[in-house]
Image 1 (spheres, one colour):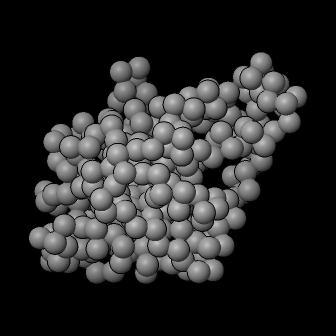
Image 2: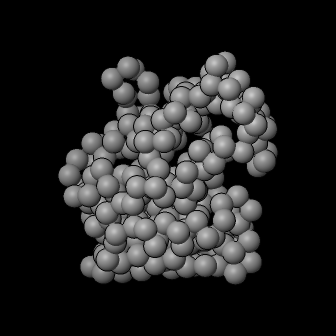
Length: 262
């Protein structure tokens, strides 16, 4: 269920596909935007936690479903990084020229980092939760040569999700498109503060990968916080997550009056 102060919105792409989301608007800058992970929606536990926290702090906040997920139009099998970025671009256009703070989880962390290089004038900070850099390429490379060829020629492959989402259909476009965004091979320049939260017990994305990214990236203010005993979903680290977000929020709006009870 949406937080009480949130209102639904719908944006429409040029091809007619609708993008659904929720916004808590205080008419104060910056605006926080949450980018969910692979196959996740705006109703995930972290998304709801952050939206409620932003509401209680009096911050403007946006969460949305990428196309193919949740309330938005489209098929999940059409997902690519470029397509997800188009969804985010539509959100940024809705917010006009307002500065934003991006919070990205897993694949959303990868997308948030790309967005910071594409729209540097809009970004004030990045909070990345176990960013899954290059996980699509890694997934493809773990397949046998026969399976790689089959996926490329048939264009479609079915996977069983490990988090209870059932069977997921994935087009080869997802793989082909992902090579454009190899942030571990082509280091990025980031012009805003970046904090990465990553559990030592992450079963999906190794902690070492965040250290690898941090060593390559050119960023004046970048920190990796290793969270002992925490898994990929960051279960048990809600307080750390919220403290990190509050630390990255600009001081003048950090202590805005509360607008709702927690």
